[in-house]
Each structure stands twice: as C-alpha cells, then as structure tokens.
Length: 78
Image (cartoon, rainbow, N blue to C red; front, top):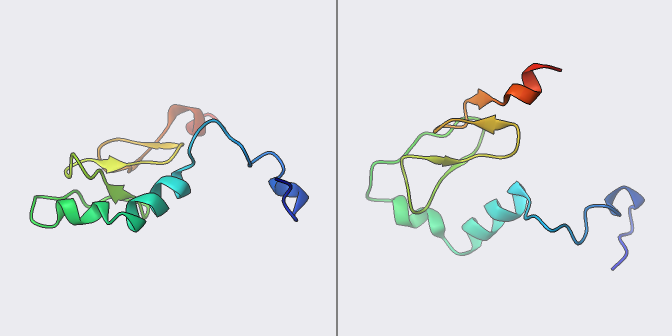
C-alpha cells in the first residue's frame, strides 16, 4: 500500500499498534461500556480508562502514571 501523502510512508505496516488505533478500536467495540457501573479513572490529556482495570488509564507514548498525568523522563530531558 502506498499513501497519497509521502509523510505517511513510514507509518504504514508498523509492527506496533498506535495509540490512536487502540483508541479507535476501543470505541468501535464499545470497550468503555465495561467501566460504566464501576469506579473509573479520570484520565488526563484526553486519554481513556483501561477496559479491564477501570481505575487505570491507557496512556500514549510520552505519558505515564495511573492517570496519564506524568511525562516520561525522556521528554523531560529535551
């Protein structure tokens, strides 16, 4: 597959799933509904609760902690 935009050449066929892909899959399969009647984390930075551990958040690269409110050490050194 060849993208129309050359800037996306290296993003196709990645061995890892991206955070956005994971978010879209969770929305499509309504994974967040598993946390509806349970104590749920209030995730920082627009992140979302883990469907099996609702008090923790799924964080993208660069963020960490149970609520995705901490920057990684690598980002702090820049």
